[in-house]
Image (cartoon, rainbow, N blue to C red; front, side):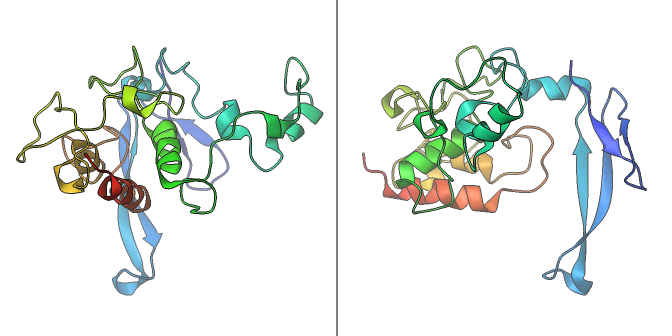
Length: 212
């Protein structure tokens, strides 16, 4: 079971959110909005919603893994201050590390997209995970085993000749459509009211470059 906490108005302590979760509207500074501010609804997940992503298949804890943490001397620092049960067995550079998805110099486009999907989607879309599609998008899964490219989607969200990913056509790609939708069929399914425009643009660029 998961638990959500919300900072109090004085920002001095975080308080446990009720089991059903809750929504709050915050006033956000935004130079592009009229008057320089906009209102944004923030959803605090319920106990059940937390488990959508923090699942047994994902190991419950998200993000604290070697691939994600192996940046900016984090592994060496954790090792030095004694956070590991056993010292590192080799140099940090010899452990796997995910590239920055939004740095074109970090890795080829496909590798960066796979890193993005691993961080944002693979906790559910793995074998025995919480996602009820057939796709497997973990970073270590070969692309031809992900059931992404050219596959018929399991769920109908409208559109003609849709595929999970339709090479060359983001508009016919269910994965992209779900990323850019904020409604019943949105992904992630919970706790987000805003499209990740940067991530969606990255995935769209990759899809446009794919060929059958």
